[in-house]
Each structure stands twice: as structure tokens, then as C-alpha cells.
Image (cartoon, rainbow, N blue to C red):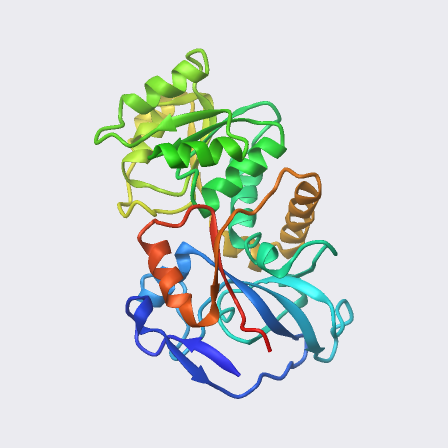
Length: 331
């Protein structure tokens, strides 16, 4: 089979397509024929060697895949050959085959295609857990989403809206503003200025009658983090999801005390490894929201397998609106 491999860490062009031996499922494993794989910002970090979890090289990156079960190992009873599935993995999705476990694998609704499913992977799980589990969201609250036109941001907009929130979407361009409005955002927050410290708070207060945001979801870090802290409501909760803006910010603890606000983090893979039952529940609710029409993965483009490094490069530059996926060549 063909697989992209990280032989030496570098930019996306350093990935190599290699032919390696077909995989065989062992005890407790499922063999998937990959039909589509989601592309995420953490994949860029993995390839470059900057991610917190890095396997021994050479290895195949990729964290989201959708495909068909080709076979199962001993002790696997929940799945059988021919099942259409979505799976979240630490690495291994950027290949024609992948080995996964039942705990990280979910049967697809009949009408959900492989590309759409692959786009409904890590980002939707991350957004849901950040909002509901870490952000302690309650129906009817106001949610401010940073980087709202990106993968996690747009997933958060859709999920929050589907769960009854008032959604404020932070974007940088008029095109992004139109995009998030079409995906359910109630208000657009313009963060294109060079200094958003005051402008973000002014816009959030104008949209909330001076109250502020109950929950902030921050996949950006950088200047957005500090500005968002100033725009929070009393007893608000800010969830740190990532640092796509590049800079890891710090917080003055006295500010948390003065406003009775809290800051916490979300590391999705810990939920996968520590509480797989919760991940299963979350995925079921994401599928429910999709069937209700609230969750609608927005595919900017489906890339052929040979162009995966191109898509990763665009992700790294912040030029992907919604999601990009790689689809396997027809056989």
C-alpha cells in the first residue's frame, strides 16, 4: 500500500510517499481501507516535529480517516468487513490502509459520505468537548469563537448554535464574515485590526448589552487571548484549544479573581485515551446534530492523495476556510 511518511521532520513538502507492506489486524484491531482523511493544523505541527506527541520515525501522520472495514482481529465483535466508519487516531490516517481500535471508531450514518465524515472528525470532537465539557456551556448562553472561519472555529459555531447558544464569531475579512454568518453566527466580531485589545471588547459588549461572553473558545492564542479575557461576562469561562496565531500567551491571575472568570484547556487526545465512553457519546451527539441540519462540514476542497502536502501547506498558512480533506484515488 501507499503511505505518506515522516522520515525527517520539516515542512509539508518533506513528506514522502512510500510503498509499505499491507497491514494486518492483530488482537483488538480493525483494518480500514481509507477513503478520505481530514487535514488538521496539528498535522502540520506533527510533520514539522513541533507537536507534543511524536512517534518514532519513519511514521505515517494523519489523525482523521473515514473508510470501509477490510477485516478485524481477534476479540473485535462490534465491527465487521464492509462497515462504513469514521476513526480518530493519533497518527496513521494519511495512507491507503490504517489500523484502529473499536474505541476510536464509529459507524457512519447511511447518508454521510466519506469526505464529509472525514471533515467531521477531530475538529468537531474538539469543539464539542471544549464547549460542553470544559466550557460548561448552558443553553442560551453567549459564546465567542476565535478563528471562527477555520476548522475548529467553524465546528464550534455550528455546534454552539445547534445547542442553542448566541454565537459571536471572530474573523478577519469580509469573506470570512459572510462565511460564518451563512453557518449560523449571530454576530461577527472583526479582529483584523493591529490592536484588538479594546476593539474586541467594545464589539462584544455592543452585541451583548454590555454583559460580555459567557464562554470563549480560543484556538488562536496570541493577541486574541488577552483581548477575549477583557470581553468576558461575570463568571465567564475561556477554553484554550490551541495557538494557531503562533504566540503562547500568559494570564495575570488577579484578573481572574476580579471578574470571577476561569481559564482552562482542552487536549482532545486525553479524552480519547482516558474516557473513550465520553468520546463515543460526543460523536453520537455530533451525528445527531448533523442529522438535524445543525452540523454541516464545509469542504473548501477535496484534494487527491498526491496533493496532500499542498493542502497541509495551506493549513499551515491559515488559508483554509472550513475544512480540507484528502480523498484516495479511485481503484
